[in-house]
Length: 181
Image: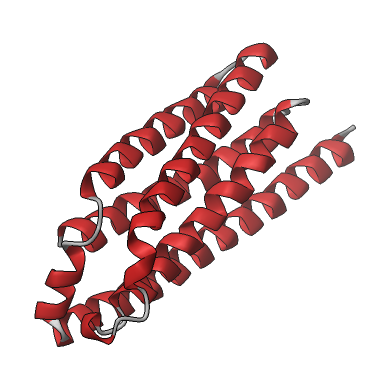
């Protein structure tokens, strides 16, 4: 009995370690991309300021609220004792995540024409790289939440909601840097 408990604790410790490696690797990857954006914005302040005028700040602001609401559902999924509430909260988080994706695609449709314009000194290339990388994470984790909602085991829910919150945190960093700064 004791060996089984120790093995379970060791496995959970390994899972925690891997989760935090993943969390920090995501933060570092996005940090490098944002640092590159900030350096270029310092080198080309006029063209970056002009490029930001072509972004849809209202859609991005609304999308930020959608992602925050999705994060609330993810937190509820983690806190829930009932599997039914956990499932519903995971579904809510995923649906709002996919709404975020839809809104972002609408936003992209108005911005894509500026990609490759030399006057903006790679602003839009970095913008699409950073937001597209984030978007890929939202899509992937949205599908993961849908997949795990069926069984909604506590440890799996904790892992996916932790990653969801990291991606929320990343967006809450991306938003002011790209849209407001």
